[in-house]
Amino acid sequence: MAKYKPVTKMQTYGIHSQWQSKSKDLPSIQAFTTDIPAEIDTVWSPIADKCGDWRMTIELDNKILADKTFNISPEHC
Image 1 (cartoon, helix red, strand yellow):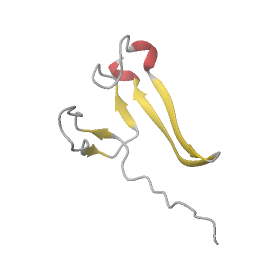
Image 2 (tube, helix red, strand yellow; image 1 turned 45 degrees about the vertical axis):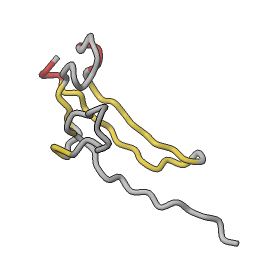
Image 3 (cartoon, rainbow, N blue to C red; image 1 turned 180 degrees about the horizontal axis):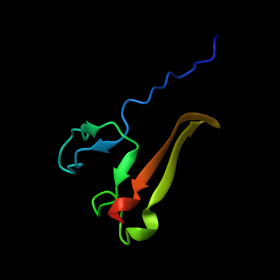
């Protein structure tokens, strides 16, 4: 029997609407971007030490499925 290979695809990345804990809906995409403003809803305090590049990777069975680097905008720090 052939080994199952999962099909993966990055659906969205960037700025999304705020997550509502009582809703079953996922946040919707507001803007496809890798430049993210440094705001308290986006990152936790203190903001100044969160600025710069943040790399996000998702792995399955030691294989990278998704790899994206985001820049937390320093002009907001």
